[in-house]
Length: 88
Image (cartoon, rainbow, N blue to C red):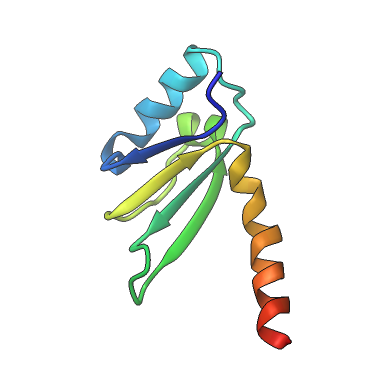
């Protein structure tokens, strides 16, 4: 299967996307990240799961990119590495 999914312009359909992905067999505990205003001055990342997204209201502002998959869990590792590299 496909490990990582990226949705552009999907903020308004996020709950329906999550429901359909679960219905299609994706793990409901799979992580989801939304990157709002990427590279803009107000960039913000929201982390959730497909299950939470499908069953609850998760506030996300457009423009945002939706990333689904285990790749989302690399975020913390990469942030820590970036911090460590900046200190060298």
